[in-house]
Length: 402
Ligand SMILES: Cc1ncc(COP(=O)(O)O)c(C=O)c1O
Image 1 (cartoon, rainbow, N blue to C red):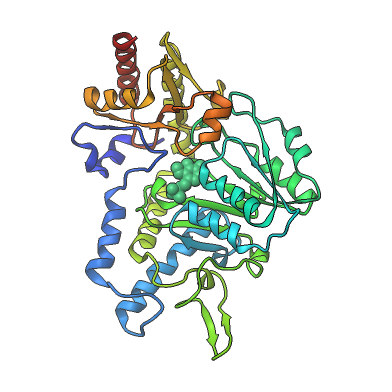
Image 2: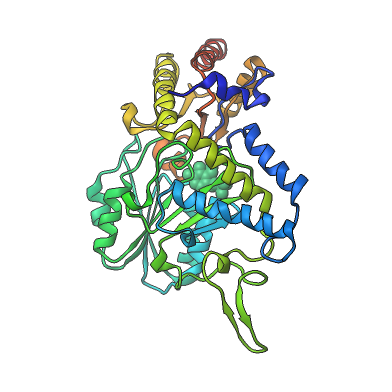
C-alpha cells in the first residue's frame, strides 16, 4: 500500500493547498531528490571523467551509478545499454539520426504519438524518402493488432510506438507489436515517457529494441532523459554529437570513438540532474511501482466516472480502467479547453494541462477537436479528495458556463 500522507511530506510544494494534476506534463520533485542534487553542489561539485582529484572521482562515481540504477529499473541486461540524454525527445532523435536510412525503408508509427515520436519520422521521409505508415486505433485509442500485422512488412526497419498515450491514457500492445516487428527483422522503439514513471516497465519482457523516457516525469529534475538501446544495436548507432568525452583515441586525420554509453554522451553532461534521476529511481523503488499503479488505478476510476457523469462533459480514451493509466482527457461542451484549465486554477487552485498536448494529428483525426482537450493526470501524491474537488469544480464550471 502507498503511504500517501507520508509521501506528501516529501513534497512541501503541495503545502500551499494547490492540487497538482499535470503530472503527464511534468511531475513534482520530492525533497530527497532535491537534497541529492544539492549534495553534489555542496560537497563534490566537479566535472565527471576528467579529473583525478577526489571531487571529480566522487562526481563520476555518482553520475555512473545512475546508468546502473536505470538499467536495473527497466531490467536492461547491462548499464552499457543506458544512454543519458536531455529528455525523451532527444533519445528518440538519437535513434532517428543515428541510423543509416535509405529510400524505400519503412517506418511504422501510430496516430496517437506525441510529436516527439512522430515528426522525427516525417523528417526522415522528407530527407531520405523513407515511407512512414501510420496505424490508426479506434476512437477510444484501442488498436486492432491485425492493423500492425498489415503495416509491418519486410520493408519495415523500425516501428515507433508509444507505450501509453499522453492524451488518452491508453496502453498499447507493445509486446505483440515487438513480436510482429521481429518477425520481419524490424526493430521496435517504445516511447516510454508516460509508462516508465507509472508502470513496471521491463524491456526484456516487452522485447523492445529501444526505449525512450524523461527524468522530469518520474520525480527527477528537468534536463535528463534516457535512451535504452539493446546491446547488439549500439555499434551501428551513430551518436547525435561527438567531441569531448566520446573518444578512445584521436589522430590528426581520424578518431576512434569509445564504447557505449560514453560514445553517446558528448561534452559535460547534466551531472546534478543525472544524479537526481538516480535518486528519483531510488524513491520510486522504495514506494514500489506496483503500489503506485494500484493507487492511480483507484483514483482514475473515480476521476473518469465522476467526469463522465457530468452531462455536458465528454471524456476520451478507453472505458475499461485496466486499459488505461492515470490520465483523463475531456471537454466541457464546446468550451475552449484553455478556459476550463484557467477556471480550474483561478477558482480552485487545480492545475491541469489544456490544448493539443503535442498530439495534433490525434486531436484532428481521432477526436475531431482541433483546439484539443483538458487533461488531468495523476501521480503517487494525489488523493481521493483532490479528485473529488476536480470533479465538483468541473461540474460547477459546466453549469455556470453552459
Ligand atoms: C508520450 C510522450 N512522448 C514524448 C514526450 C516528450 O518528452 P520530453 O518533452 O521530456 O522530451 C512526452 C512529453 O509530454 C510524452 O508525453
